[in-house]
Amino acid sequence: MLERLPSPRSGTVRRTVSLLTVPEPTWVDGLRIVATGRDLAVGDDGARRVLGTRDLTVALDGQSRITELAGALPSAVVEGLAGRSVARGLRAHLAGLDRSLLDPSSLEAALLDDLPTVGLVSGYGAMMEHPELFAGRRRRSPMIGVCAGWAPDATADRRTRSGEPLLRSAPRAPAMSALTGAPEDFHAEPAPRPRTMRRRRVLDVTATGAGWEVFEYFRDSYFDPGGQEGSLHEYTVRARVAADGATIEDIAVTPEALPFPECPLAAPYARELAGTSVREVGATIRSRLSGTRGCTHLNDVLRFLRHVPALTSRE
Image (tube, rainbow, N blue to C red; front, top):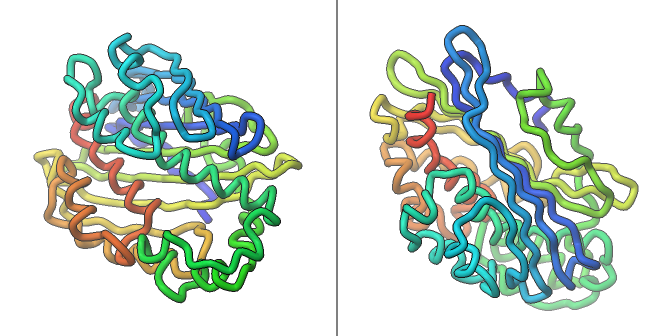
């Protein structure tokens, strides 16, 4: 588990994203998501400049449909998302919007793009708070084969078939304030609350003489009824991008905390992104890191690299 985030260096643009997920009133009845984000530039003299911030509030019903969306979005975007399920087709809908309505490289697009997987991850909250609802089923899960953690006969598969609780707890995680070297290294977010979940992302793009250095941090956390934060999914990524701001020259992934022993087996396959474009990273992941060669959450981490070109132009 990561103990310290690097402070952004001179020549860095840092994008940070945080999504607080609150059950309303339970994890299966509905969710309220408070999403915040910020872009920060660090000049050659070390001075920090906020390039932009965004805040969105989203309410989902028990079928994962959007019942409320508040934030600085065009009315056409809000109206087009009303009643839409975040579990099916949301990202395709967002990708099809005119850039004049939603710039795919923007902070608001980054926040909206996280809604499908944030909704998916909320199921872990229900598992840990109400294990009795998931124990004793002794069934084959439809998740089998979707990723390394759900490979046939892997830990998750065996627990499901035996009727054991799938997940009992998450390893204790340091508070975000303990990870940062300075308060301004991560944007202000709502205070921690018991029985909630939190997704955080950090993406650093730093200019070098020969191109760009990229650092990414990702963590899904669960705050138990006592307010203790545990890490469900946590990754760090280090990459080198060519001077064109798009071509991945080298990439390495470090799994920091994951729910099942088999989950880290997907990380080495990320090297197959070397030589490809971050602009096409979504399609490349689907073709090369699908099934048990990938990890649902790692693939989502790697998709975030699509924001690199936009950040290289915002220094």
